Length: 229
Image (cartoon, rainbow, N blue to C red):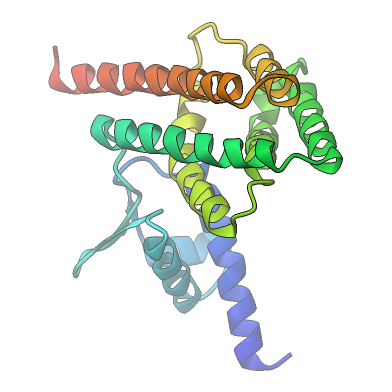
């Protein structure tokens, strides 16, 4: 392997690790991302970290500030509401197209993805397996829309899911809303396989709307606490 390839591979490794840390709440909102500290923690050079941060900024997973470096993105109510509404609109479109294009292979993939997710959701050590649950949760929702026939739509949905992941991860760490995700995901799987497109769109919208409201409540409570009200 050439030195150029080694540098590229190292930068990609740093990018993937830092991206995972950001999506799973390792850095708080607006927290300064210090290049030297990250390089020391990951055991790499500063250039690899700079390249990773530049890629993440292009994906809007970190905020770049002129002459002030990088920070983890802000988490605010207005941004979350816009993100939630957009995700409902785009994923309902993708789900509709997936169902119109249904195949036996796709239906089987939906069932398998659901059971992988539910197995973790029902486990006694769920809190310890939360990172694993998030991977399978993403896979389940991606499988639902993955048969839509449009790479562009799937990639855009992936970007929206990345933006939502930080909010959802933190909300799950503080989950006291009484929701049963297993029941919701089973209902979604069932209606996709056995119901009409309109019924499936309604269930998906309700599922995301519950998440939207739960995180709205969390952010509003944080705003009240911050204001001293």
